[in-house]
Structures are given as C-alpha cells and as structure tokens.
Length: 343
Figure 1 (tube, rainbow, N blue to C red):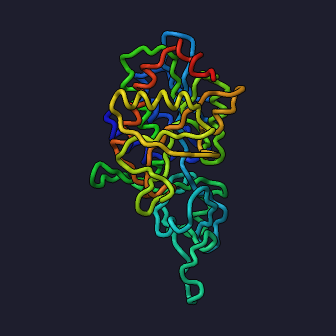
Figure 2 (tube, helix red, strand yellow; figure 1 turned 30 degrees about the horizontal axis):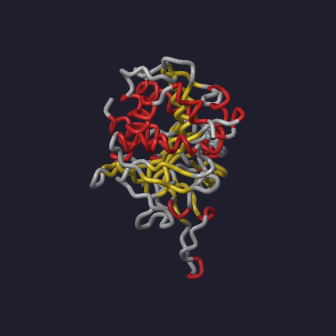
Figure 3 (tube, rainbow, N blue to C red; figure 1 turned 30 degrees about the vertical axis):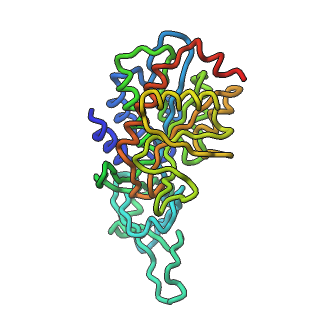
C-alpha cells in the first residue's frame, strides 16, 4: 500500500469519537504485515511488534475526528445538530454525511439574514442540514443522536501539500504506518505497540486506557499542531514542510526529548521545536500521568485550518515524522533506559 493511498483512505473514511471501529478494516489492511492487531473494548486499535527484550515503547496517534450529532428533526424536514470541536463559521455550505439507518448526504445551510443587524452572525443555532427529504422520510431514516461527519475527498495542492478532512489526526496514523514500514525488517531492542487511540477529541480517553493496558516504559504521542504562518497561530514558529515538531515543556521527558533531537541530527531529518509550558491538549497529557507515571514524548505534524474540512498538511512532514520515529526506536537500547529516566 503506497503512503499517499493509505493517507487518502484513512482521511476520507469516517470515524467520529466513539466509532473508531469504523477505521479498523483500513488499519488492519495497512498494518497487518507489521505486527499482530487487536481492538480493545472501547475501540483502541493496537498493532504489536515484538522486540528483543521485555521493555516496551508505545507510539500513539488518535483515530477519531471532530463531528456533529443530530439533536432535532424539524417538521419542515431539516436536521438541527450539536458540534464537537468545530467552529460554526467553517460549517457553512459544507457537505456532510448523516450516519442513520443508511448513509445520507446533506449540506449545512445558514438561515438567511433578513435584517442588517443579523448579517455575519454565524451561530450554531442558525445552521441546519438539508438532505432534500421531507420529515416523514427523514424521521424514518434518522434518529436523535446519530453521528454526522464532514464529507470531503482529499486533493493534492502545490509544493507537496494535500488537503482534506480528518487530517487531524490521520496524518499521524500515516506517519506511524511509515514508521512501521521502515521497521518491517528490523527487530528492535524494545517491543513496540502502535496505538490508534479512541476519543481524543472528547478528552483523550483512549490514551489513559491504552497506557494501563500496555504499561509501556516510554510513551510517544503523535498528533498535529498549528502552523504558524499566514492565517495560522502566529505565536508559534511551526511551518509546513520544515519537519516534525518536537515539543518541550513539563508534559515531556527532557532526556527523551534530547535523545530524539540527537537522532534527528544524526540522520539529517529536519525538525522544529514547540514550547508548551502547560497542557499540550494531546494524548501525551494523559499518557504521562498514567500507571504511576510514564516518560513521555510529543511529536507533532504542523497543519493549516485545523478542525475544518480543508485541513492542509505537507507530505514531507508526514514522511519525516515516520522516519524520525523509526530511527529513534531502532537506535534505542534497553540498557539505556535506566540512564534516561534518572535525574
């Protein structure tokens, strides 16, 4: 399976928080040659690759995406909804899929403004979904609480950039896929567990579950972060195409941070540094404090337009993130661990 084909498949697939199992067949097909695969009771997907010794490293990327849920079926044949993690401004005129008794296409429409004072007031309560069905048909096919996901095919842009939905965080799963492929014919010192975690977008729940199930010696969260360029988060230095972003701050083990930077330098892999003095808002936050404390790293891929249907990522950043993780794991020896964890 080619890297771009895999990325396209997982980004275009639907897996809102709580339904990560919808991704399982794609993950199984992509990762089956790299290790043993199983799923937890609450939809964490695990890929286990055996190493030479008993120590374990966990590489985690969350599988879920931001989503909507049906909250009302109006007598006029429209759907009202609640959103998780999505700015209402980004929803106007977007295509969506309602996951009812069958998949139903719809569009998000904005209630027209008939008065100047109401113009530009894009609020969730003024948005509704039009499927074309009347109330009777819609009421038969859709139930309150049904999931709704954004609908967008991935497209290629210039300079190695691609655009689509759910790049957060399927880009990181694609980086794990590249990492696993790089290590296919390698038996590392440490056992590896790749985790596609559940419910990150609603509170990093899968990260804690996986940490207690696996009890790794090292945990590495792989996620996306905000680009710092035009229209991005100008407080950050992150740039698309300039490599994976290594986080530094209290959420991260400083010796492991220095170790992975040394790996990047040794293998001439471009990297960036991001300072996070508090909650990183990622799975790393929950991994670190699980099971009495797990030395943790956070490696991120910069993207533009996060939590929209047009998230943009650079393919080189995905590839270099996968390469960095593979070289870090390959070079890491079990007899190093005690020295890394002592201060």
